[in-house]
Image (cartoon, rainbow, N blue to C red; front, side):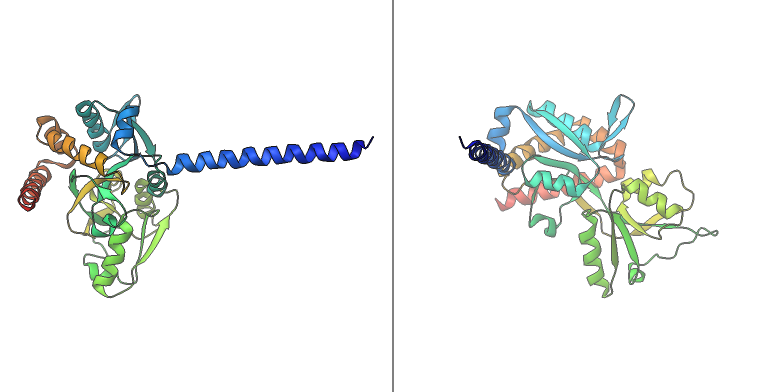
Amino acid sequence: MNRGGNKTTFFVVICTIIVLIAISLVGVYIQRSTTFTDYPEIASRGYINAGILRSPISYHAEGDSIYGFDYELLQMLSKHSGLKIVTHPETSFTHSLKLLDNHTYDIIACQIPATNENKQEHIFTRPISLGKQVLVQRTDSSNQVTIRNQIALGGCTLHITHNAPTRLRIENLSHEIGDTIYICNKHNYGTDSLITLVANGEIDYAVCDESSAIVYARPYNNIDYNTDISFTQLRSWMLHPKSVVLNDSINKWLAEIQKTEEYRLLYTRYFGTSSYDKFIRINTWSDSTTISNE
């Protein structure tokens, strides 16, 4: 008997089976990752997968309690829509974006500027807040800072969390002032870490959202965040460009929620009364403009 030949044949058959199984599994994974999901599929399964960034504004855990404007607004949305919302805390906006693009997440619920550049690749909900991006820098012994005018940023290196939406604004600002502004993406660093690096003198400048700077700068007496990098911007949640029906449904629910006292109290708790009054004025004007154009 040719035992050696039988063993070889058996080995080849086993290897072929293993390869076929592996190919099948990869095919299933790719199909899952690229399967299009919109409101009908989500309503059928009964829950929304929401990526949310860990920050004192969006999602912040203290003991057994969870706080954050975006997290608490998601809970209002869940109650209003009757859909369960499963939140997935993230430290990386880039990672969240990848999971949104492959339909693992249905929405990214954090303060994202709804700029024309961002709208080229994703769709956004109606605005949920106002905000602006600021320069974080150290003060000297006389409480003075190096930069108060955006033109002085030419040649400077600004540190941001990795691939944050802030990057687009800095690139545009570089064109506006006609000089190079260098951008350093800090991998695995949150806004709190960047502000600590500035306070300790390890880096000179960082850029972040003003609301986050207010919170994270509290422990330091040598941090200034009063130089604006952007104008006041409308902030929204981000969805996959094909999730049009889901976006329309969320916008309807948000429009109803934003008329409630519960929303007013939530907004003013995180951003203040003056910001709320301005936000409502802009939103009311935007809604009336949209209606008149329909």
